[in-house]
Image (tube, rainbow, N blue to C red):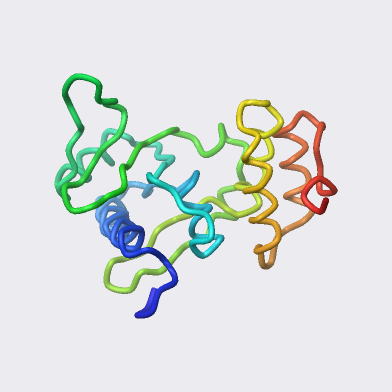
Length: 185
């Protein structure tokens, strides 16, 4: 990301910290985390849809959390505070490991995209096709009706989407209830 970035300052700062954490994990011989959820949506929509946290999938949560601590992250504590995530005193976005396997093993890891951050390393981001399918699955469950809008926004803004792969993934995530036509409506 260069000067004049389209992203919010706090989002870009958090991304750069994640890039340094990812580099440290890679240097130690561990697969870095993959950014999923709202932060991935924010990347793919170039900030049109924003998030309040960074959700990650990482097979070695213990290693990731140790590296995060070395980078200044702390786990919030106290009455009424959720303790699943991590915060950094210099960042306004929380971080949380939400899975040890990318979409329960359904996502094709070869489709992961990498965002280069220059001297801050890089960040692995779940493929936009999988983000769209995940959003459609959440919509189909009935628990998150707003996710249809996110899936459609990602689809409209998506470049170089593998339509066949995405169509299959949407069918898998929605038990065949939804498909490509639902993104185009």
